[in-house]
Length: 504
Image (cartoon, rainbow, N blue to C red):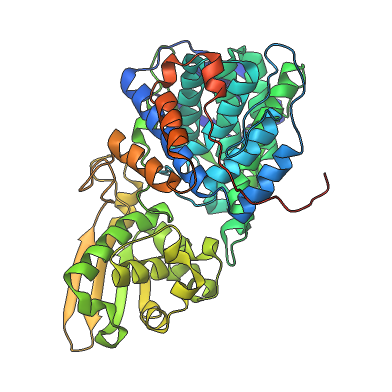
C-alpha cells in the first residue's frame, strides 16, 4: 500500500490531474491485477450475507416502498447489454439504478450486514447492490462481478481508514458513492478518464449531514446508502456519455475538504494499493451475528453470557447501576454521551433502538439472546422491568478503549469495553470483552457455514426451500457464473406486501 497525501489546493497552485485523489482511485480501478482466492471466498461470503439480510427485510415498510419505486420502472430495452437488473423478492427486469436502489434499501434496512470501522464508519457490503445491478444489466459474468466488488470494497475501506466524515457531521455514505462508482468502472472495464469523472460526480451528489442518524432516526437511514449506490450508477452513465464532474472534488479550494471536512489546513494520508498489488481490503471487514449497530455486537455477546450465568442480574431490583466503559464512538454515538433522550425512550423507532447501547445491553442481558424482530418489538421495549433496568445503564468514554478502537493493529483493534455492575447489596461485578464472538479474533469466528446458516435462518418462511438452495448454489460458484447465471443471482418470494401509492 502507498500513502497519498490529500489536502486542499488553491486554484493558483495548479494541482495536476494525476495528483488528484479521484484520479489515483481511478488508477486502482483500472489495474488488471488478479483477485486472490481468499478474497474471492470472502466476496462469496459477503454476497450470501447481503442476501440474508435483504430477504429478512422484504416485508418491511422502507423495502416495500423502494421495491415499488423500482417496479414502476421496468426495463424494456431489448438491445444486448441492456437487459435490466433484478429486484430482490420479485420477478422481472428493471432499470439498473432503481434495482440498485431497491436492493440497497433491502440490504441496509435491518443494519445486519458487514462493517468496517476506522477513521470513519462503513458497511462496505453496500457496494454490492449497485455493482450487481449493473452487472446484470450489462451482461457481465461472475469473474467481472468479483473484480468489481473487490474494487468497491478496497476504495471505500481505504477512504474509511483515512478520512473522518462523522467528525464534521457528514454521513458516512459520502465514501460509498465514489467506491461504488470505482467498482462499477472495474466491472465494466472502463478507462480511467470515465471512472475519474464518475467518482467526482458520485462524491459531489452523495454528501449529506449525519442528522439521518441522530435523535429520532427515520426510515431514511436505510435509504441513504441505496441513494449513494443509485447516484454511482447514474454518475457512471453520465461519464460514459462524456459528461464531466467538479474537480478537483476533494482538493479544490471550494471542494469537500475545504468546506465540509477539516478545512483548508486539513491533511489526510489515504492508503491505496500500488499498481499490481492485490485488492485485499475486504478481508479486514467483519460481519454481524446480531441485527444491531456493530459497536453493539460484542456487548450483546457479553450481556447474554452474563444473563445466562447470573440470572439475578436481569432483575432491576438487584441492580444499582451499570456503566459500560467504552470507546469515544460508542459513548457519543450510541451511548448516553450522545445526549439523545430517545435512546431511553420505550416508544422509539426500531432505527433509534438499534442505535441505543443502553437498550441493547439491557435486552440481551435479560433475554440471554438477541432476535432481529422480537428484540425490537414495541411490547419488548415497553416491558416495565426492562425500562427500569434500561434507565440504570449508562456509558463512559475510556481512553484505552478509544485507543484500541482506532488502532491500526488488527490484533488489538477492539469494539467492546468493560462493564461495571454495582449491585443493590453492595457487591460489584466487572467484566470486559474486546471483540464480538463472530469477529475473526472472537470466540467463534464466522466461516462459510455460518454465512450459509444465517441465510437459511433468515430466509426460512420467506422463501421456498428450493429457492434457498438455488440461490446458494449460484452464490457459491460466483466467479464461475455465466452472464445468464449472474442475472439469476436474485431471490423471488410470494405474498409480499403491495407498495403504497406514490407519484409513479
